[in-house]
Image (cartoon, rainbow, N blue to C red; front, side):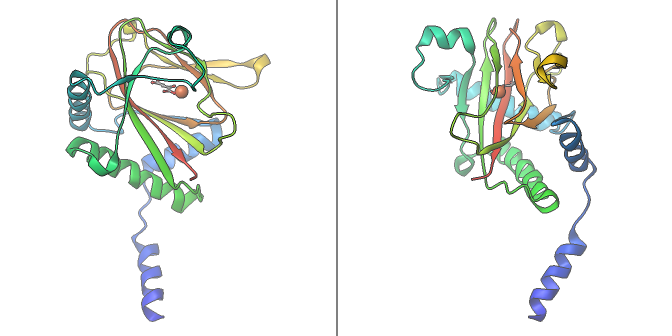
Length: 218
Ligand SMILES: O=C(O)CCC(=O)C(=O)O
Ligand SMILES: [Fe+2]
């Protein structure tokens, strides 16, 4: 009994407010999305990019799918990225650092906003030159488990807006829709409400690297 109270007290005392997480929570509450620069250090980003490139070199990536009854030609007109799912259980050093930060964020969200995030899934994505991902929403019919979409860019430091590949979020009601353009600068993350925000990746002029994932309720 006393131990339980001590533990609870300790939990309350040990809670440290995190300004970056608070920013994310405030943004999502107000705008349904948040963009944070330097969420990941350039060191982690470069290790993750190297890991992505190694695995791509070893032919582990697959062309991304969009549901099952779609043939390859149609698929290519919708999205052209190659992906590889990341398994936390067999994560390498860079991936473990990535998951540590994600898990820290998730536990903060669950503690402070009762988000109820119990599951997560992440994949590497490589967009070859000339590819894109047409306007879409990240939730499937009959499946509303995806709550927050999460993208983290792994491009090199010299990424130039002229490379294209910008993420466009479509915000607001149809009649007054606005576009939020987000460049895929390394270390930058974008978090948005999966069930609400339509978005697209514009055609890219050079290879574009990222990790995309979802925080889910179960
Ligand atoms: O890479 C991005 O900026 C977004 C990717 C995306 O929309 C997706 O994979 O569902
Ligand atoms: Fe998406």
